[in-house]
Image (cartoon, chains in turn purple, cyan, brown, orange):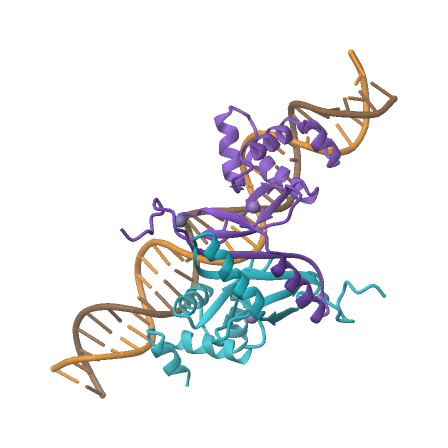
Length: 141
Length: 141
DNA sequence: AACAGAAATGAGAAGCTTACGCATTGGCGT
DNA sequence: ACGCCAATGCGTAAGCTTCTCATTTCTGTT
Ligand SMILES: [Mn+2]
Ligand SMILES: [Mn+2]
Ligand SMILES: [Zn+2]
Ligand SMILES: [Zn+2]
């Protein structure tokens, strides 16, 4: 239940938090911007301000409930933390996002950090390319 | 000579472009924000507007002369393209940036892209952590 | 060396995303 | 049910980057 999720994250259970978590859950295969979450709230006739959306998403992130990613394009995107780390590959033409996890890369990163005397806290790996979707606008016909 | 560099990039040789290229060259070990380049121009009594700095940096990037990176913190940083690709490891405490290149990681990325049907165009790999610099503010004493 | 056309520049304003201030509302423990 | 403090909504502001447009500067050509 969402209430438990929010409570366990150390946050007071409020309507905005419930609704936003709900939306992230229903779109767990996507990566949504704050604006998109906000628009989705409007569709559902929820009177929740954009500032609250940003605030709640930031709180979810701080609580480890959600992750924020900075793909090219200015707007940050959010997704629920599913417990297993993954990185992203983004189509620069149609925006499609796929996820992957590569043990070899992860290990190499740790090794590199060690070699440079860094205690690694986080990392961001994003591959940009053109996807092979026939519907992808960039596909030569 | 800088003039040749700029001309070969397909850009008209202008004073702002010369000066900005000069500054990037003199700071080739750093990663500078547009604002930092602008401040450096002010120190040199060059009457070059911030808008021009942004424009020129963007043009340098488009021409392959420079690279833009988005480390955490809002501001993009720029560096001259030295011809050899590298990725970055950033200290989240003192901001120190080190560079690395790992053939294994690069190969894995290519493999992953292939597996997902993406023609890879670019990638961004940034490791965040705490460095071991004794001067680093975060160092426990 | 002067000229003309096109491209580039400077200054300020605007755009966009995100954060903030504050009066008001709303959870939640009592 | 009550009251306190956190959370919210709205408007505003901040930070970074880009745009607009009148003016200047290149560049190739007389
Ligand atoms: Mn994801
Ligand atoms: Mn670099
Ligand atoms: Zn695509
Ligand atoms: Zn450090």
